Image 1 (tube, rainbow, N blue to C red):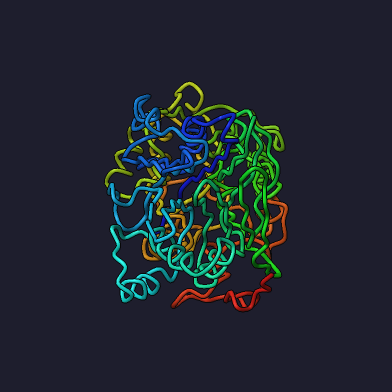
Image 2: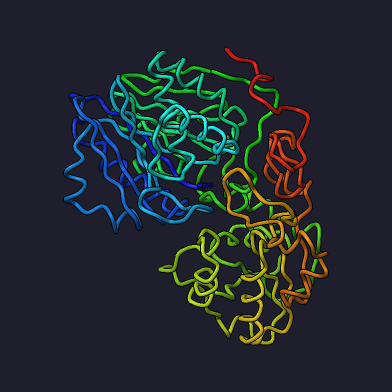
Amino acid sequence: MRDKCGVVGVRFDAEKNRDAAALYIYYALQALQHRGQESAGIAVTNGSCLLSDKGMGLVSDYFSRERLQKLAGYAGIGHVRYSTTGGSRPENSQPYTVTYKGGTIAIAHNGNLVNYRELKKELEAEGRVFNSDSDTEVIAQMLARELIRNDIVEAVKEAMKRLVGSYSLVILIGDKVIGVRDPLGFKPICIGRVDGGYVLASESAAIDTLNGELVRDVAPGEMVVLGDKIESYRLFRCKNHAHCMFEYVYFARPDSIIDGRLVYNVRHKIGETLAAECPTEADIVSPVPDSGITSAIGYSNSSSIPYAEALIKNRYVNRTFIMPVQELRETAVRLKLNTVRSNIEGKRVILIDDSIVRGTTSRRIVDLLRRGGAREIHVRIGSPPIVSPCYLGIDMATREELIAAHKSVKGVEFLIGATSLYYISLDGLVDAIGMPKEDLCMGCLTGVYPIEIPGEKCEDKQMKLNHFVSE
């Protein structure tokens, strides 16, 4: 099962904020709701026992005041989830809790393990029983096994040696909140300081919501322990990293800072780059809301073509990209957007979107604008063509379903019904993100991945954990 999710961890002084953890986690998860809308969960400790609650639906729908009041504790973790493969079921919601002879641990995960089936078979052969088909439970069981014979730091380190893939983890062991990031840094996770304690979160926007202060990102290969202070252990180092480019293009909130880059600035630069790479005469520049908004502003500012909204979003409909069932996704497109006819009738429209995956959504949006009276529709895309699946945590379908995997740009242009179509260049995207190409995961754009994936091409720079420097 591949998950693209949001994680949170908080740790307060037990004397000053003994019961505050769940409420802080609740608000932080709401700030990360865009990262997953299928289920939500919270696990906390009051120093003597671990309390957990999780269920299907949005954070605010599942967690009532009564549920939160039952989660009295000063340290805890939380999770919001959406699934790709494996199905949307209550038993796959997180955090997972595992009991071992030293106690009970809770764990929440953002990412995807490439080798989780192999690890699961190994653990099942040892007699361990699984309640879900999620790779997160595999990590939890592996960690519980290692904790029997090692201290916390060594247990995490030994588990990491076996994990192949992407993972940002928050773990609750005793009253310590632990954050772990994989050695290549695929998925984001950062540390913040709040009044009376510390917080870990997938994005800095969650720390802002708690009126906290961003301290820094968790480094690739680092483990941090939140107790009375922040303890840091750099367990693995590698020459280059593999930060997910799609966090900047689409998934993260524009007001989040990820690995030192404000996402808003990256998307603004993407728009400027699109305007420079493919100058086009038009009457208005318009985004596909919401992820295209910042890039459309950048395009408009750079090209001096007026910005206007061609589409209005119904904000009570979930994000179509993260809906796992195709039928639901197509229905949501019809519910989600409506045109502002007076802005587009008889106009030449430059339409800015973050990506084209299957092409279904793009075709429907172009059709909407045509029916609204647009004379020309020039589609501009803030990522290069997606030609390969993502195995590391973002649902990008199979290669057969990816429209750019088997169609030329002109072929995609024809199928979505656009007057013209242009994708940002790979170098243009790298420049907009502002970090070296060698430190980005762009496997979905190039077909070459930073770790070994059966049947796929792999970069030579860093394949296995035993090639990394352990400290």
